[in-house]
Image (tube, rainbow, N blue to C red; front, side, top):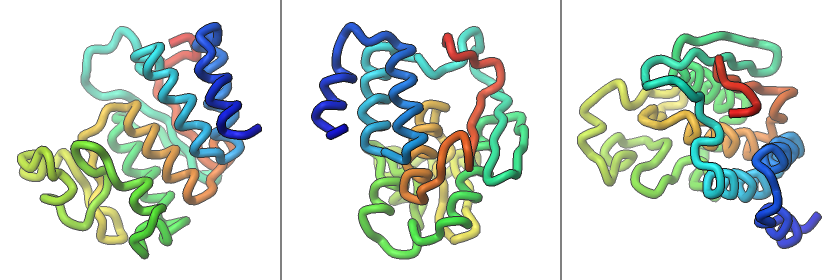
Length: 184
């Protein structure tokens, strides 16, 4: 299916949240990052909070992750996110080896970057965040990962990294927030 047709299908206001979630899931399974991004934007626009756990008011979010047969449960989504990023970058180091479109695709954010070699540049719109070590962690490749993100942002970035590394969601990697159901 071409991208324009997919955009029209996703933008159809008759589509339910579940149908859009299925379209997102299918795009991720096929490693179609651009299609997945289009579906996620529509979900975010029409169903704000569609991917968040309801009934929680901050605090730790237990999260189950897996990568190529290795599975772990972490008490926080932040720890799970960092573990999975580390696995992705070890399996596909090219993303950060040479600055190219792939690096920009996964690293660049609007107000702050998701990855960077320099903390001040990574937090360019919010430099005070670089003062708190809870907001970042250094990857084994020498880059810093921004950890000051909500769970939707974490999942979006993981999808981008997976698309660049060609990691199949559901088969090669998992991201499941405990207590979250498909109806949320």
